[in-house]
Image (cartoon, rainbow, N blue to C red; front, side, top):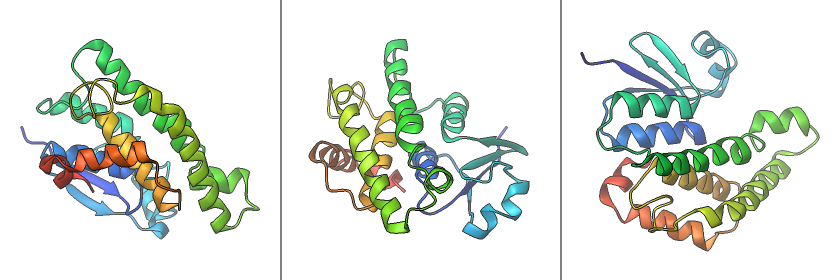
Length: 199
């Protein structure tokens, strides 16, 4: 039975980009709904009470949190696996994703900075966000691309997506190019299917 997938997303959302990249790479049909800034604080709360994107509605069931959504997609649409082969490889992929999601992304999130550093100007926030991501990416580097130019193992995985997406986010905040991560991103874009799926 074909499931109807509706993805609530927003331009510039790092977490949304991850889910879109997975759906597009796996060539899974879905309807994308752009959520405006205003809607995040008003009407969208009726769909996702957390008030942020992404949110995937599957035949009436609402899923939130990008990692949980991606795990669901992997289990439901197992073709073209993006989670890794062996149990050890899957654990390594999840480790990278968890580090990006919790240690890098969350502290620099706009709502977190607004709560803990309300005195910062928008420009100061951008600089702080870029600096934080760069610092964490430098720490992560030692775990990546040990077996191939892909982040973990020898195949494209969600680890590549999480790493590339957060690197692009840092560049948007004015962070200087990091050669290791720039090379990784360019490597991914050499593969037509990966590049075509990139949001």
